[in-house]
Image: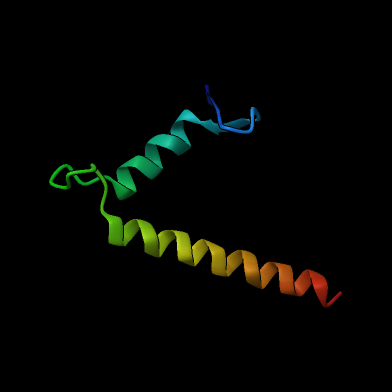
Length: 62
């Protein structure tokens, strides 16, 4: 099953329900006002950006 969400640019972002639930479980924090652990969320985002940057650099060097 996929969750489809329209964003502001009218393109579709598709993520499986399982992936959505796994991410939600990873960053969720019921004690937080916004429902997520902001520090953990930022660490995950920064880590993923660093992985992307590393892969992009490797592609550019080919």
